[in-house]
Image (cartoon, rainbow, N blue to C red; front, side, top):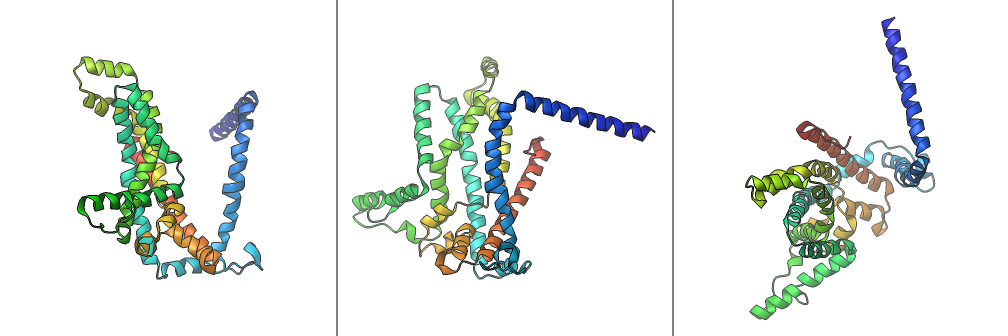
Amino acid sequence: MAKKKEQVQVQLVGVQHKKTLWKQIKSRWQIYLLLLLPLIYLIIFAYVPMAGLVIAFKDYNFRDGVFGSPWVGFDQFIQFFNDRYFPRVVPNTIIIAIYSLVVTFPIPIIFALMLNAMRGQKYKKVIQTITYIPHFFSVIVMVGLLYQIINYRTGLYGALYSAFTGEFPDDILATGSNFYHLYVWSAVWQSTGYNAIIYIAALASVDQELHEAATIDGATRFQRVLYIDFPSILPTASIMLILAIGNVMNIGFDKAYAMQNSLNLNYSEIISTYVYKVGLAGGITDFSYSTAIGMFNSVINFVLLLLANWGSKRLNGSGIF
């Protein structure tokens, strides 16, 4: 009897919750109506295409279609693991991903803390505007600017070196290992100002009475940044870190492809560029193989996202789910 009563109570609570939720939706139907547009967009462009992932387990051909092509199981994945490019593509992707995460994640936080500590509002606004601008450059324009600067003959680097020494410098682009540094630090230049916006917004919500009390107690500006500002953005930083780790293997195809040349190919060939070359370029058009490679990359990202969220919950009790 006691169990039946508990079950009935749980059912009643569920019914009341549904009625309350329906009342909330009915009372704010305009807001929920606005949510339909992004929801429809996600369904059409994010969830419906997932059905096409089945070709990663098939030998896809146009004649039989997605669901009519013969099933091959994990053959496409085994082929990728045995591919002669696997020892090049995967390590390059991992190196650039870790390098980018280590460099590009903390710099916007440091920049936001430094900017928030500035006294002059005019200088602060000028610096914010200057650092935001590179984010709105297209990747191709950014790569073009980068090459114009570091070209050893016609670029700024070559012109200054020749002016002081009378000789041409070494070609930076000819050294393949320089690709890692050029890729990551150009991303720092392009994204630091924009990525710092969310941290600047978090710092704006800090109670100024805490700073006033700390100042009265004799705390220096650096101590206030360290013990007031920095802890206030830690929850935001933890969420951003989880999202960054969950997206760490998704290195931008367009930038890597635009920066590739025959001299740095051993260092610049990553999963996304290899997927493009296998699936579309060079007349190969092996859609099943390229889909399997992309799926392998996505699974790694998903696992890293779960691990990052679990670790964040264990350390500070906050996560995205």
